[in-house]
Structures are given as C-alpha cells and as structure tokens.
Length: 98
Image (cartoon, rainbow, N blue to C red; front, side, top):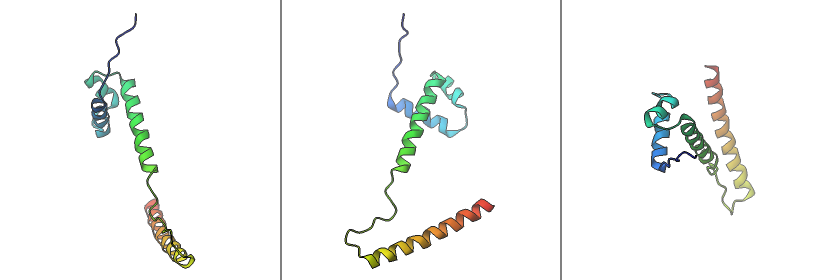
C-alpha cells in the first residue's frame, strides 16, 4: 500500500528555506519543527541554491560596448576597464594578505 503524498505550496517551501538561511537552527531542526522530512527540506534548499547561483551567473556584463564604437573608442574603453580591474585586483590582494 502506498503512503499519501503531501503537497506543499511554493510559498511554504520558500518560507522553509528562508528559515534555514537564518542560521539560528539546523536544517534538521527546521524540518522537525515544520513537520517535513529533512531530506525533502534539503532538496528544497539545494534547488534554491542552484536558482540563486544561476541568477548570479546570468547577469549582463558591466560594460556593454556601443554598436557604433570606433577602434579608438574601443581602445580607450578597454584601457579604462583594465585600470579598473587592476584596482579591484590590488584590493583583493590586500584582503587576501590580511
């Protein structure tokens, strides 16, 4: 005989994952408190992590070149971008040495 399957709303799942993210209780404790299997909550959490990761990686580039950009304009734009990236790199190196 098959057990009845419980269906949870998207809002419930989202709220459950939010409770896990707060960090004041373990995932297992949150699952117990909500009456959900901890493996189910773990799957919801992982799916949410993957969605967040995709959103973060799918952002458009910081600088989009104009369509009518001349070679000289492109060189100037790339030089500015190089200087900006060198500054960011130097900051990250300082943080890494701390």
